[in-house]
Length: 437
Image 1 (cartoon, rainbow, N blue to C red):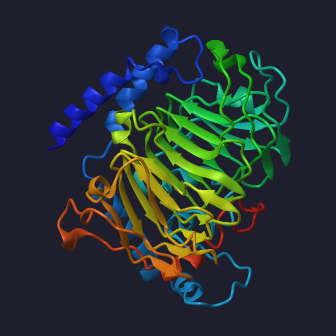
Image 2 (cartoon, rainbow, N blue to C red):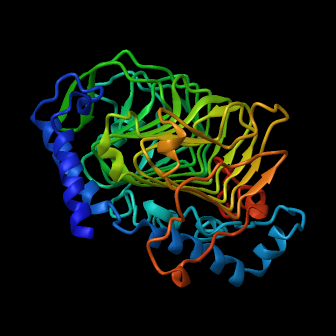
């Protein structure tokens, strides 16, 4: 079966290689970009897990282990008031957050990814690079000490920030492979400028950023690595965009008010985890798969965990095409249209989330299927397990149980009644040296 799946995926990726959309914002799709695209397809196939239920079960096992082994965490999740002490309320945070020496042990974070993005280590195997200058005024020859200069380096780097700063990106920021952007200890705002883009790259961690009010870029000559630059067409105005990227982990980011969407993962991106983040004031929140005509997104596997979908959100939390989304232990506090949607027969496993509907009788349904009649979507595997439905919220299930391994081997998620506590510290954290974060 795994061999058959690999053959299907190779066919899909072969079709993708001739698609004009594959070029994205790359106006000159030269030999460098062609080689990157080919390498990205190979990495994506290697990252694809033929049995996603094993990843789901492993994720839920770590949650249960945290509850069984951490008495202080259990007390907090059972309703004890927060006292200001470090309380790691999920297994990702438990891995690093309560270490008072986190600033000296930053790279410990690289061992903490869970879900489909597990194994993402970012720049763990490289030196530190400290961003000292918030400027972004030279797109072809960025100044040393700037974030743009850091992310184009062609080697693993662990990128930190010398102090609080507001960075207005003049055009989209193109990140090369094997990078960690670690904003812990500083208030770093990506504000009122262009988006962050990961195109045909792998192994990237983005942690602790505030990303607000990004805008569409006009394009132009932009350096995308130390050894290459080229002409880019306009960017969309997303907060974070993944295009043919694999092994990506986005953790503890705060995002709002972007021109297009907050997070996009498209064109065969896979092995992604979005965790511990806080989203507010946005129409299109999270898009997994850009078009019904892109079957290469069948390889997409994404974990969405421990996030708070908060004030003034409208739709796409996430919206999925073709792939597999594990949406687990998130807290949804209102949506104006729907929370989870999709088209083109994606598999969506919703586990242990809290869905609090608004008072509008038009916004009670969690789910929305697009572009297909019920006679078609009734076969799509969309399942709700241990979710908590509040204020009239309801999830319309379809298809069959998402089970590819023996049921006795599957670890269930924690119930939705715990979701609000497990997401208590979502978003960018205020971390101070010599104190637990």
